[in-house]
Length: 114
Ligand SMILES: Cc1cc2nc3c(=O)[nH]c(=O)nc-3n(C[C@H](O)[C@H](O)[C@H](O)COP(=O)(O)OP(=O)(O)OC[C@H]3O[C@@H](n4cnc5c(N)ncnc54)[C@H](O)[C@@H]3O)c2cc1C
Image 1 (cartoon, rainbow, N blue to C red):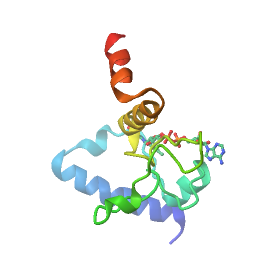
Image 2: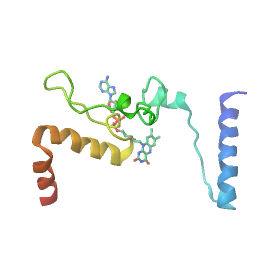
Image 3: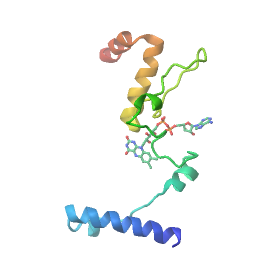
Image 4: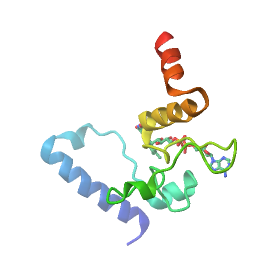
């Protein structure tokens, strides 16, 4: 099966499921796009094709927990790998990182003030 057919088959499978819940939705779709881990590898540059950063393991959360502070002085981390993916996740992660510089109490006071 070539990649286009593979993607089409996956899209059909998903649409069939969505149709069960929202009958007729297929007719309302103007265009659709299907991506695979290879799309993410090639277009957003994640070596393992991950859409949402590093894989977290709920069985062992501490093994996939990254701290904003590193062992290297003055090197801090932020972004979706820290806490949670998505816009909310990176925003919360950014607050965690900034709180290491400013202190959480002071940072929250400043955020609430503005
Ligand atoms: C197709 C798609 C749809 C999504 N839709 C949603 C959505 O609807 N809602 C939502 O909340 N989230 C969505 N997400 C997830 C969201 O985009 C990510 O969780 C978020 O962008 C992660 O932010 P980040 O700053 O951690 O990483 P990124 O936004 O990936 O930023 C990392 C940056 O680091 C740069 N970089 C990487 N390596 C190096 C290097 N060696 N040197 C210098 N720079 C480097 C990259 O170029 C990039 O600019 C979506 C993601 C994808 C891929």
